[in-house]
Figure 1 (cartoon, rainbow, N blue to C red):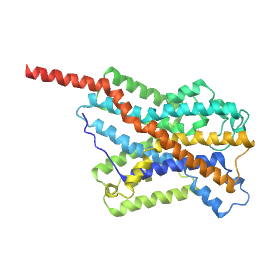
Figure 2 (cartoon, helix red, strand yellow; figure 1 turned 180 degrees about the vertical axis):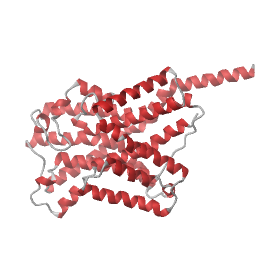
Figure 3 (tube, rainbow, N blue to C red; figure 1 turned 90 degrees about the vertical axis):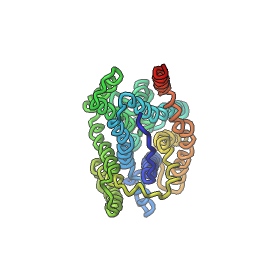
Figure 4 (cartoon, rainbow, N blue to C red; figure 1 turned 60 degrees about the vertical axis):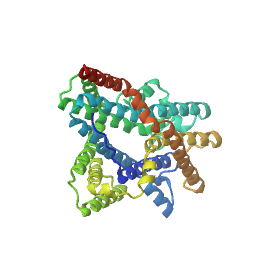
Length: 389
């Protein structure tokens, strides 16, 4: 079996929670507050607010690079394993438990939010017409569809059905799952593992690839960002980047790119390449700045990612129910208080949500692997009996 080593890099922890925070503040601002073009006389504070909340998509690019670095690194370890035939189910169980233990409860939350909206704000404009904003560009009413919910549960949203508007960040999970399965299928093919279950994984990955090419080419394009993360992990492990100047140059280039991206939208592949170059430096293994609290924040970043959006929709529903709003809030003191309170509530609720779901990932993993582990123990016992005989 593969020897598991725990990679704990402070920079990865900080990048994970910062990326989730970038996505969350972007969506909360977009859903609750006016766009910059709608502000007649923006103040310096307004300009600062729009600047720091403009990196939602960049946050997703960070996630893809980190996923390639961490999960892609595990796929490479599996590729080099002497016991790949018995190890690959562990990779699959890890990926399945990691994604679905949070996804399915999040979809239950989405269902409750939809019921709340139907009961308390059935005629709200964000529910019945579109666009409400960049993040809610279709009527949420369309989410009252068994097909969409089932596709979201199977991570086929964005392929065979539209992503739920009540939780639009779910689009990226479909991408992630495809990258996980494609990496596993490639490993199985290269190592010539052709059991029935392995062939099923390969066929599944091919179907996802065909659907992506036909219905969502962007999923395939962004796979290169994920691969950049894999390359970064190989570079990191081999210590190919050791010069201290390269370490800080990588960080400065990422910061500079984000600043430029605010004015001129940079290609995802370019931004992903810069982020991958930054994390590939071996020097980050020695950096421990804020590692403890960074790890704690990163520990519920996935839950925060999937929970913040439906919670902002609940706030919109309450504003419509009690105040009859027909547009997003102005950038005054009240609007900022509502938005910041929503963000604070999302952080607290996400931490509780993670305690019930994300923190239980290993429990689900052990359940999934229980039959496999039992077989392994039985085989070892049988072997020991034969030796004794």
